[in-house]
Image (cartoon, rainbow, N blue to C red):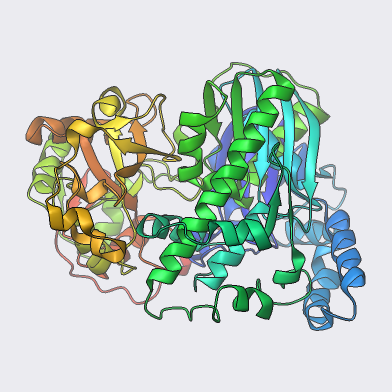
Length: 607
């Protein structure tokens, strides 16, 4: 049985193909179109899924959408009526897209499939619709290695739910309770993202990275005026301070008066105020997550927890949950946002609609390496056609050569195997560096990524050596838990460094691996397993042999404002457009920037 899950029309469109319960392929549309968070019908992602499985649209048993548009439309109408006449401009802005495509989605999807994939006129494919939070919950539980687990989903909003709790057992998901719009932890965090001058739905991780530079001096103000948190973690927002129900902005004048000023203008200098606000809302978010998890553990008696929804990408909160929470194991869906809804919708239909069992019981994401790969022949054809000089290596010799370059503080673009599904680069489409270098963070931020200097980088570490460097109690293959660098790996600070605060902390080396140690001694850890990604594990082993250090700086292979690269051409374009030193495409090493591509070739879109 072949089930295609899709998400689209809001943000971060994606497609996922499940065949007889196995995740065969999954990818986000942005990777093919090169439009960050592209919400369009995911024709390229669907085409990739078909190519990967060797099928066509006529072979599908079901197409499932990750959301129920009529319920979402009901929520919009009820919200506008509740706040009328406020919100009239927002109403006029939203209605055309709803009346044109979102409301009559079955017809829209049928038309798109007929246009791009020659859907037979006597269509036998079922079009199904999953609820938004069921899609999140299914992506978390059914893809996890746990047969029995509590499930917590937290995001901005689905149809009505903003937070939902579930009990998962074998192939069943039972809904327990939910918190409904407009009371949303995700939207509260996004309001501060907006107020700090970052883009909503993509800048939240910047706010999280900014938090350690600040002091949580606004925490009590947030608790007194913006959110009422009960002991069990349930909460209500004071809507007098927000504009997302009726306007086109997240915050209003009352919010601005509360925090003594208008929102920071994007790209303007960051001040200590933004850092303190980030620290404060991060602390509040963590408190809500911890209280909700304790309630869920008490209600269900389960030892394992699965997480999904955009808030589940807050790896700092996840790290506290792992250290201080009531669960023995915590598993987070690596594509926790709306893109992962495509995967969850397909798994929900397989297990809940068709009532199929789960087997074998393992991490079904397989490292999240579910996207396209490119053969040596395809890579060599690309390089040769553009007269790009290269050296071809194989296996361990490749890893040894690249390890030497990394040890010499060269920045390496690393392109191997299947592309990652979700927002994190996990060693297939990564930019790598030496974590021991005191200058590596600033070099990679300013000369490679072209982004804010305060942004931290993540360490990739051999799974078997992770506990030697980080205080972490379980594996973290998806870079979704923050853990502290172990005390014995930290550096002793002199008196002046100890007194530093805010942005002054940025250039103070904090450990033996300063390039991946954040200012509060934390790190967003990725543990690398030889089973899921042999090339990346092999490179880390060779780097350890070369330097004694089993850790590398790992950041996504893209520049600010662009999606992670998908194809060899995307990777070379990024290499040429930055001050990266080395590009590794499969078994090929490139160090010369001889071809200057101006536009992405249209033939690389899988249409």
